Image (cartoon, rainbow, N blue to C red):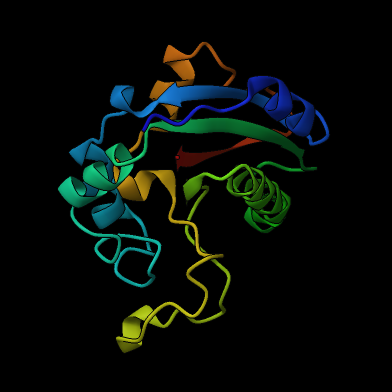
Length: 183
């Protein structure tokens, strides 16, 4: 059964939060791309160290199948301001508020009777030391959100195709998340 979101109710909910932009997407339009995984493998220090990143999230084909097992997705952004874009600690500290917001969007959809799966920013940082390298299961699977890129999603391509903002200039950061949902 195709997910039917009450848009008016969702609009009322989302207007209470500092969401900059959002789009409701049909997952048929979402494509996974190997080039993102290559960047993960070759350039990301989190590769192979967490349940939220490859290879723990599964093959690109498995991730694509997971995404397409959901009918729809809410893709959204929030804005954060920092004093210096080159200060990585300050920038990453703003991410926590976006992750809370992401959880609120997922909780709303679940409250409406939908099953959800969340893809968010960067890599999970719920635990100081992930259980993955020790071969143990994730301690907080409901709080752990794999990043969009871990599933081969290129956020900038969605932003472009949906005519959303990607860069606001100045000392602002746009964080992006996607909550997939199905009835």
